[in-house]
Length: 227
Ligand SMILES: C[S@@+](CC[C@H](N)C(=O)[O-])C[C@H]1O[C@@H](n2cnc3c(N)ncnc32)[C@H](O)[C@@H]1O
Image 1: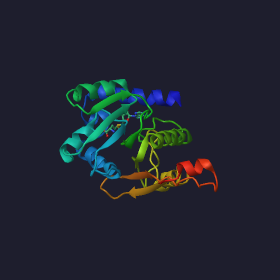
Image 2 (image 1 turned 90 degrees about the vertical axis):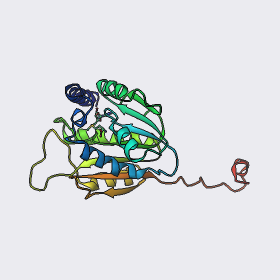
Image 3 (image 1 turned 180 degrees about the vertical axis):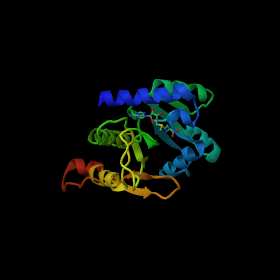
Image 4 (image 1 turned 60 degrees about the horizontal axis):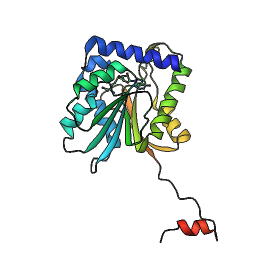
């Protein structure tokens, strides 16, 4: 898994070093599709109240551009995390005057936020075997769940119907990951598709914790019971 992560890191360090803080620098063809993904992912958030946000695989922080444009009133404590130090360096320069944005190099959420989002993080497989790549995705999803108080959102590319899978890219049908999040993470999942890209987005929410059953006659239970 370490070698896999190092390869991913080097790939994205290369894109940002070649192109700078523009969509091509994070391997997206244009800002329109990049923003359309943010529209879907941000549907997991409740904009009626202030919230904290982990932007996992933040790149140069393009999500902040979108938030400023479409949700300028929102109070968002933003934390961008990226595996590539070059990416984080570019983000820090780009957002030097932003007072509520923090950026860190890493491949874990490492701090709990209300929500976590990841856009485009699973797409470039770089020839790794499918089984390894899916184990890696599972570990990222588990980390995002642990790092999210309310919920998290991710996107995936859909397979082509008439072309074989590309070695360099990862594509999946929704059921693979809807099933994982429902059964293994015990979360509720909303699937978004048909938004104009050959992709889907999952909005994943933690289920409300049910209170532990009270033991009759237990003093501990009595102390904890609501007044
Ligand atoms: C396709 S780019 C998208 C960047 C940004 N989310 C956006 O939409 O503008 C994917 C980003 O995820 C980062 N990334 C990939 N795998 C990661 C991991 N395991 N941990 C942290 N960052 C990762 C890459 O370095 C890259 O910046």
